[in-house]
Amino acid sequence: MNVSVPIPRHSYEIVIERGALNQVGDWLRTLWGDKKVAIISDNRVAKLYASIVEKSLEKAGFQVVRFEFLQGEASKNLTTVSKVYDFLATHGMTRSDGIVALGGGVVGDLAGFAASTYMRGISFVQIPTSLTAQVDSSIGGKTGVNTTLAKNMVGTFAQPDGVFIDPEVLSTLGHRELIEGMGEVIKYGLIQDTELWEELEAMDGSVQSILEHAESIISHSCLVKRDHVVADELDNGIRLYLNFGHTIGHAIEATAGYGQVMHGEAVSMGMVQLSRVAEEKGLMPKGITQKIEEMCRKFGLPVTYENWDKEALYQALTHDKKARGTSLKLVIVPELGQAAIHQIPLQEMKDFLERKE
Image 1 (cartoon, rainbow, N blue to C red):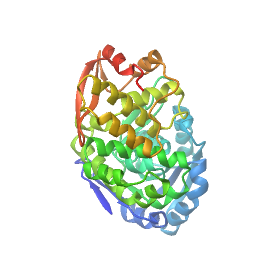
Image 2 (cartoon, rainbow, N blue to C red; image 1 turned 120 degrees about the horizontal axis):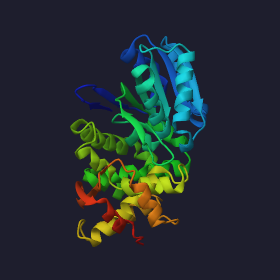
Image 3 (cartoon, helix red, strand yellow; image 1 turned 60 degrees about the vertical axis):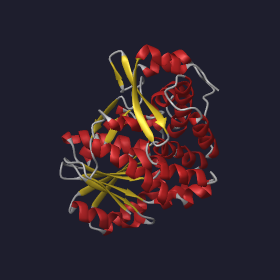
């Protein structure tokens, strides 16, 4: 299946196809023609897939170099990006060359950021290997790295030349890595796609069911993400709907220490916590929190954060990119399949951080 992303200044295709990794070279030859290509990956993904991609690229006539960094959110920083710059320069990469981001969300965000800033920008494509990256972070052109204060504090908007998704790679993910991706999938059902929500309701929540439904849930998710990105590329309007659960979720990630709580896990906890308070305040319908919580639990996602520290979470929230002066744009779900923005004074966000169980 192909999903078109018709952004006026940079349109591209999302290709979703089982066994696609072996065809990367042919795909990029059509897309790029002659370029020197740098594969950027982490050490775990590279061990599994870098040789497959490298051979496919070389067979298609590309000159290929490879950069690997240590797996994990702790590597997603400017120090690693600086090493990428040095690697690219050492290997003679120019603005006519390209980067292949091969990995999960950390790889995609970091490689995309490096590509968008090296020599003021070179071409790149995303080959996401985690469920979270396949349904979310590889699409839409947000790149970035973390600082000590906040997740994705430094970043750019830079659209890839294409996204190449092979659902078969999900079978090599660890249990926790696969399950955490369902946090984003559930979110898409909540904010827009009721057909996806119904499919999730019909699934039994097992790893096997996720793998069997992979193509369907990935394509549904990509279509929702595509719709929001095309309508609002620079995140000033309805693209903010994609942040349902993320305001509190990002704060949990930051206070836990990056990598301690996985992104989809944090989104799950963020959605449930926000919904509990929003439902109490009459901002979301009665019973919706129970639906969200039951869905998250079915797929093995956490719904409460044990090390809850209201003040630490609030301090992390003050660095949220949706904050504007002394106010914050909070995403709510007034009914299943719809999202809305509820702007509140930043101080009022403390109400949403009262621990609810």
